[in-house]
Amino acid sequence: MLNIRKKDKVIVLSGKDKGKKGEVLDVFPEKEKVIVAKINFVKRHTKPTQRDAGGIREKESPISISKVMLVCPKCSQAIRPKFDALSDGKKVRICRKCGEMIV
Image (cartoon, rainbow, N blue to C red; front, side):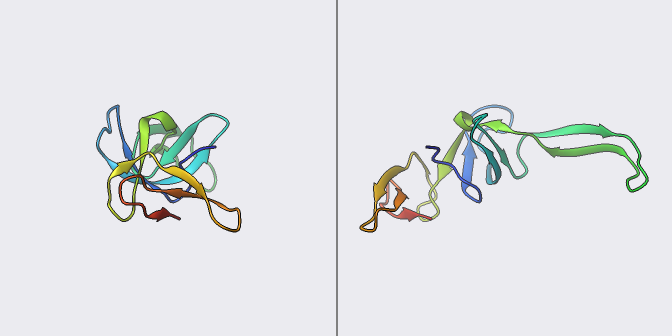
C-alpha cells in the first residue's frame, strides 16, 4: 500500500528540485511514480493542430515515489506515516511526530 495519495503535500528529497514542496496531482501505483505540481518540468514540442497553435510547452513529468516524502499538514514536517485502524475497521495514516491523523 502506498503512503502518498492525490492532493497530499510532499517534499522532494533528491534531484534538480530537491527541497521543493508541492501538491500531488496524480499517482501511478503500478509504475511507482507521482506527478507533483510545479515540480520536474520538462519541455514538449507539439505540432500545430486545428485547435492548437503548437509550439514548446512546459508540463510536469512523473517523478519516482521514492524521491518524495509526505509532509504532515499540522506540523509541516516530512514524515513516514504509520498506519492504524479505526474502531470501524477503516485504515488511516497517522503522523509519527505529532500524532495527528492525515486525511
